[in-house]
Length: 429
Image (tube, rainbow, N blue to C red; front, side, top):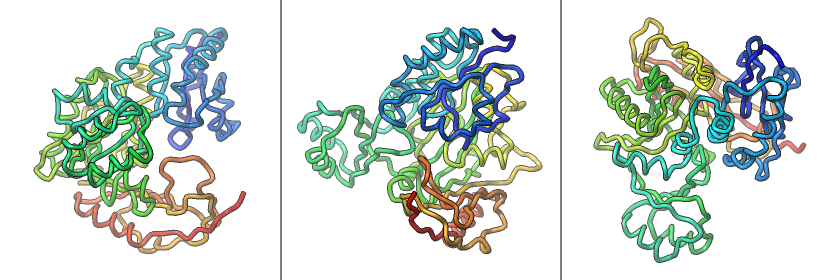
């Protein structure tokens, strides 16, 4: 037994985390990780952990995979505890680890987000059931293998326009289908069937916005409100053509409305400590309508963008909340709070990679025409290998921009979308 306190990390992704994340001077940090991810982590990084437990996931790397092996996790943590003592904190930072981390907390009587709260942030039916008397939400119906054709027909009869079919516990728009008419959904269901764990949802016309921040002791310490531009997670995942981009909102009145909306959502769902990634619709009439929320920092380039432009590290803030450590944020603020080094607006863009198979970069176009508003970028080198690892948002280039206002950032994002591209050729391992 050591003098250090024992902290369990559920999964580790070196795209977001690095060796400096691990406070090995004050804690014995153990890791629970699937075999694929364990093989990707460098030996020098793995050696920083006091112990590593490799999980056997029955269904590969699906979002629900870790939650299916909680019994394995419990047994491994019991073994860790013989050497390092019972855990004082469980860190779960990703969509696929927030719920199993909560289950470990409850089993080992560790403080933090509990299972009931974690479920409300994972299950799209449960979150909307909780919120429908609090904020506007789309109409929705749980569906699955037992849903009859007559029941499905009755559902779509209430939805005259487009219809959404989505998994209730996925992320990044994976598995989401959009039908132009209810009849198209009925035809799809007749031909393909609908698995359990899905919902039919009303299509909401409007701009998809995302709200990212940290809440501690029930108080939002930082909030950034932005709109997806030139596409969305859905179009990026399903088309493979257009980019995925985002720009912060410079309308202070709208940001205040979004902040109030966010406060009500977090309070109703019961999140008092942790990071959040909320998505909502801004309709043409100016209404705000809930889409979904997660108890984690935003993916893609969201956390890198907020750290680069505003100095807010949502990854470290997420870890601090899981470990009940103080926040580094001294004064509650939004991205619009005045500051000598804060721009009027900012944004980021993932340029799409249309090639889905393993490939190598042969040419990079447009770097000489990238706007001067770019403050950070990641572009591939010639001969660099792409698509050789699993990933939800593979891109041909990534850029972070700042500007005087939302409109100027949008203009520069459009320029990057127009001028930047890469040429690749297939690569056979």
